Structures are given as structure tokens and as C-alpha cells.
Length: 252
Length: 287
Image 1 (tube, each protein chain N blue to C red):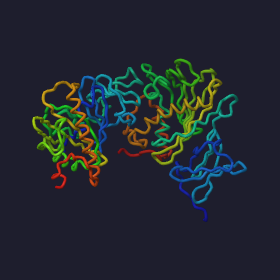
Image 2: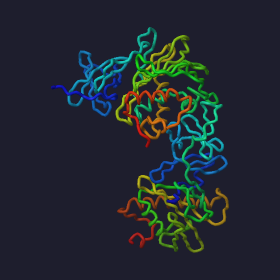
Image 3: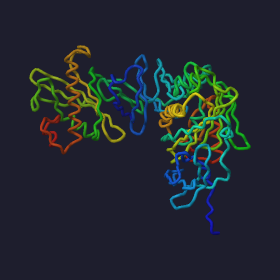
Image 4: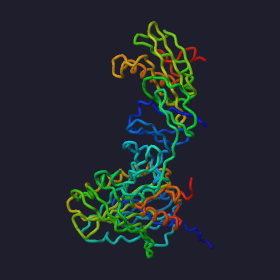
């Protein structure tokens, strides 16, 4: 099985960052060297079983929190602090899984075969958000979603088209008058049956991450993602304000 | 034969601390779980402590080292001795329980470990770059069938509440029972004596335990509250490790986890458990 799973926004894991991800029933540590390379391993130190996701990065090595054992990017143990002069046996390793950065996302694969099912497009991160629905239901909602294309967008206006960029990624193009915007949403199955939504936006030429319009856009889309979550988690509730999914899609 | 003859079981036929003696006043009772079995502990108005199972059967009781000890089986030995408990001038400290979602055996093994001090108890019991664990001695004392580690030395920035500045601390470790560990360490105000710090681990389930630290110290400067606070802080740091070790049960198969020289005590402890057939809280086959 060569399935690649999006586990985070690439921007969410900074150089030197460490995080945990669960794929199927496999517990993973995902971490980035200070130079920026992403790695995904079995989340267990071979010494005393401590979860490596509690560890810390020093340069191009991940260190276990428990005893400070350091592992190189190839997962081979390079340093045991209790014995500074010892060259650790090359047999002390973690289990290495596939890790890639593509389309603004971090992808992992237990087999490491093939490539993530998504074109390597340039997009900007918005946020990640866990939604208490099945991944398939979240994908279906995204394939019928509408969103505030511009600051002046009104519910019910604009036209929206949807395109699968991969098995777990949906692009939503919105046009409203002169305004146009493309959302990219990736769905990660969580071990408890919920789904993680990783949201990105293609806002055209990058004007830098901190300029006014970009920040306002991200805030608007972040609010939209929360609205989508509320809508999906409360299917019986009737809201007086607009729904983030096209009405005909909800009925379908 | 009218009496039920129960099979010997190393986990059941052992003494365990199940509460602080001083916390159980005459007429008071508390319920707890020991090795998966609910038990009821109460102090009679006359002062005697009675421990009973849910079917009313009485369990053996000892009151020692600040705690109430009992067993849900039939121990063929008495509670181990801690001679220092009766030594003049020591402050005896009942620290109180810390509940940990881990195997009772993992809790003991962590207590026997020094190499984690610079990382888990940073700037208190250890600090980089003084991370080296120099060779020490480990043996199983045949008389009492106890695991001992001696001649252990480690640099500590603040070895005890009474320590000022960093010192190289001498240690001895003693495992008198599968879920009890005793640590003897350099006593800053009284050279030549050893401070005694123990953990009495009460197994609730194979992956859940109450840890009852207890201390017998020479310390005239710190209040009881300060001593308790120091020890609780240390143990809460350990808990963040213990609840994140995988698997939760302690692997007794040597292929499951790779030790190094610093882990000699841990290796001896695991072998000793295996030899005694103490598998409650242990994983015996590779997963």
C-alpha cells in the first residue's frame, strides 16, 4: 500500500519542530531538521520506548527527551549522553517512514512508495482544524462548499466550482464579480474516526505573508472553516445565517 | 480438605503500601484497588488496621515506614527491613500518592535510572554537559534476593533540598521487592550518612499504579512541606515520561528495548523479575 496521508501544513512544522501524527494504527514522530528537512519515524525510542514526539531537535538530529539519545536524519543513533565517548552501534535505529513536502502540506507514508497524490502547487497556509465527522463526509461537503470569496461577498452570490486535486485534496474555485479565489483543502483521517482539515489558499502572486489583504483573507477563511465545522457537526441545527455548503449539495 | 489451596502468584503474594498510616484515623475507612482487587482499609476505634476484600476475607496487615501494608495473597516472607527508618535524627516524610498511568514495574525501573536526570530533572538532579554515567556495580544479594546497585556517582546541580550548588552525588540503589525501590544518596548536611528515598508502588492494574514516595532524611533546615514539594516536583517530572513509554507494560524480552552500560541496574531488575516470575505489569513476549 503506497498511500500518502497529509498530516500537517508544511508551515506548521518549523525548522527544529517536532510533532506527533497517527496514520492507521501507527504512531509517528514527524520532525524537521534546523536546515528544514522533514522526517517521519516510528514514535518510539529503541532504548526505553519513550515517544520521540516529546523529543527535541539539535541541528540535524532528533534527541529523545528521556535520556537525550540523538538520532541522525537516517534514524541511526549517533550519540548516547550517558557514554559521551562511545560510538553507538549502527544497529540502534528508529523505523523510518516516507515523508514529503508537497503543495504546502507534509505527507507521510508507511511504505514510502510512490509520491503524494497532489500536484506540487504553490499555496499559502490558512489553518488546520479537526472536525468530528468521517473523512468521507468532510470530503463530500468540500466538494459542494461555498465560501466568502471577497470581503463584500454575500451568501448566495458568486459561482463555485470544485475539483479533486487528489484522493484527499479538493480545490474550490470561487468567483464573485471581479473577485476570485481558490481554496485548497486536504483531509486527513484521524485515529478516533474524526477528520483533520488542512486548509490552504491560492491567492495569486505572493505579496508576502504579513501584508494587510493576506491577513484579512486568512482570517475570513479561518472563520469559514469554523463555520463549516459547526455546520457539519450539527446537522439538525437550523441556522438563520448562511451555510458554507451549497444548498442543493446539502439536500443531495 | 476444606481449605482452598491457592496457587502461588508472585504478584498477589507480595506486600504493598496502600495508604499513609497517619491519614487513617480511628474509625476512618478508605477503599482502594490492589493488583486488580478492590480492598477496604479501616482503622478500628482501638487503633488496629483491618484490610478486607469484597467477600469479607481479611488480608494481612503491617504498619511500617509511614504506610499501611497489605497483600491480597499469602506472602511467605515478612515485610523487608529498612534499618535507617529507626535511626535517631532522621525526618520521616510521607509524600503522598502520585497516580501514574503506567506499569508499576516501569515506575520502579525509572526510579533506578540516573541517565535521565539531565533531561527530565534538568538543573535539579542533572544538567548538560555533565551527562556521563561512570561504571558502577550491580549484584543480586542472595540472602534477601534483592537487586543492589552500588558505587553509583552522578553530578547534580541541586541534589537535594538541602544541597547548595552542584556536587558529585554518591548513590546506592536497592530493590527489596518487585515494586519497591530504595535509594541511598549523599547526605549534604551529614557526611558519612545516607539520605534514604524510597518509592512504594501500589499496583492497581497492570498499567496503572499509585506511587507512594517516602523519605528518611537528615535535614534540619527545610520544612516538611518544602521536602514534600521537592519530591513531588521530581516525581511529576518522571510521570510525563512514564505515561508516554510504549508499550505500557515493561518488556522482559531483551530484544524489545536496547540497553547501554548505564542501564545495568535496569537489566538486572528485568532479569530478576523474570526469574521470580513477576510478570504482572510486564510484557513477556516480543510484540
